[in-house]
Length: 127
Image 1 (cartoon, helix red, strand yellow):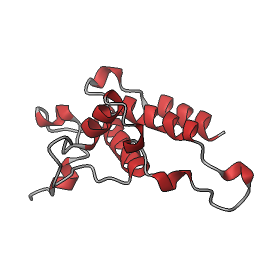
Image 2 (cartoon, helix red, strand yellow):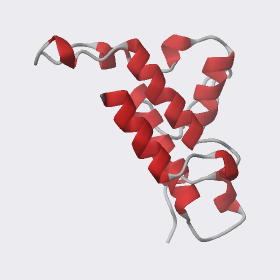
Image 3 (cartoon, one colour):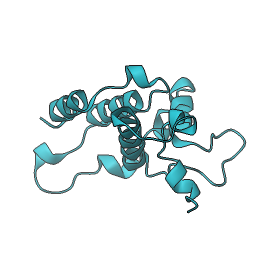
Image 4 (cartoon, helix red, strand yellow):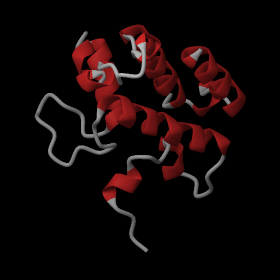
């Protein structure tokens, strides 16, 4: 069965060399999903411009290095959802999610957080 190119966008780099997924490769995929949620972008850009990377984690890494903070998240993510003042998402909160997502997408499996660390960090961010 052939996989779509978007499904490839969730795979950790080391899965190119090995066939079996593991907790660290799943953490990588979770990081890609978090980046997708934050940015509103697909994991693989089928038509990147010459200054864009086709792969979302690399695009986001390059945005940080190029100080293009506006590329890190979709602007609508900061809009109030109307429940109460406590429900407003702050840029600081979005950047913490972004940092967690990028840690999960580390090219080196040994420095990715484990699932307990991810859960602990998510709980810290939302509380």
